[in-house]
Length: 382
Image (cartoon, rainbow, N blue to C red):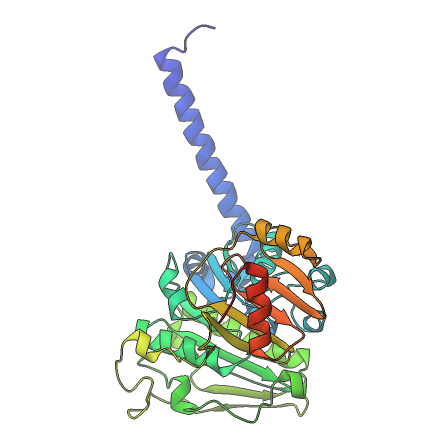
């Protein structure tokens, strides 16, 4: 083959650069077409869309609210989503958790990574990071990129107070949301501007009235998630002046909604945002119950008849090796594609994750869950 003449090499390089420019232009045109109706909305416009395309939101909890908000932001054209959830998909989720299907529930797949796959099918241009674990200050410090916004899709106040603490310590705004029965609420919280969650609710409710006891209507979820997603678009699109200040509350059954604590500033005497304590001091220690007789921490999953078991020290499980040992012991084992391992131990169902965490279904006894976990992974608590 004859060597390429320098003039030809230059021409080929020029043609290649032109092709790259054309491809980039085509991709931009396709993105504009995908989001054209949103761009035509004048208060948001092309500038808001451009800001959104560079933005990063972290959604904590990919259940009812989180799946709605994550899907909406993906369809809107956000640049990056980080999804965090400690749970697996269950049949009872499908009534209101829009990113999951029956097959996901039957397989018991982890929510965050399953939702990430669904979002990739919606728009492969959105960068998605899935973390099949729980949110806390330690996880925050392990993130490779600080998000521009935190979004609450959780179902418990320990997690919400943890988000609140991280937000105060870092200055990253967050959007609270909750839905139970036919009622819902949501609120934008910008540190130093808006009252934080503990300003309004210093202590977690103790009545235990969660969705497992009271049920939840999908339309209530949709209304709250719509509020959260809209406020997220305002914040991430640089439209801060349009942000709704106050606690949005709604009862879809009675057809009532209101806005409480309008433009409420932070409380000077608030124990969370009234001082500038370090992040570690602000993160609640109530997310887990410590087990003094072992190197594990445990937490009950709301309404699931399940216990989460988590090693106090970071570790990495060899799931393949655990599967071999479990099968040799006569347990039924399902490999969830390397993302997790499902093991049937008698009447208990255990889902093990690579980070050593486990969900033990079929018991509300922490000691029993910890013992089963230790047996499977080769640890033997004293």
